[in-house]
Length: 273
Image 1 (cartoon, helix red, strand yellow):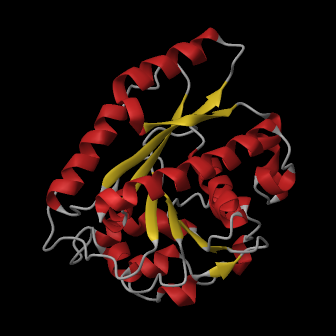
Image 2: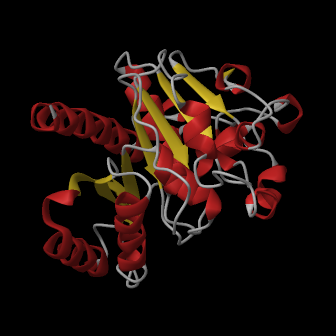
């Protein structure tokens, strides 16, 4: 894992977080759009970069495919600036750079390109001044797209499903973060682990939560995201769960998660300074 230079330091105070987990179906995109919505509700200016070729974050925020004329693909290919790719959503304070299916071929197209792991970092450098948080929704794999997200990010947020194989593969992800930090982006850190799809009626959920907290300690957020039908229904309406039903348990959990994230960032800011 090497490239011709390290990630450029950010020129603004925008906090960039990559939401990553190489295992699919863990609530990664759901966390991206609902956490972003909750942050926007606090007055933050938030941008999502949809880096998953499936484009679920874009669809979940009501951006139909016909409107995605400039996308994350164009950013990676150097064919558009960030300002040209940003689209407003129906949620005040929340914007998105949408995904298109062309992202699926980006890895092959960039394989021999210069600064292939820095394409997103270069596109974002000096261009995020209007935002407080930028969330990158990564594909469910540790590929070149995810590496670009990690090289561009300040931290990695890991949604982790409360199931038997929760810890399987997590060590690989953490190892990848360490390698990116050592070789490409020295400011990268684990922002935190978010336990998702928690079912209090299931003893296994409690056991998994205990195991993860035992292994990773304070890196695990206190907030857990419950299994919730309303969260599952919301994307089909092109809305985050927080907009679809702000009183359901899942929405309330994401609001608490946003509050906890902001509190943790405020507490870590003096140490970072």
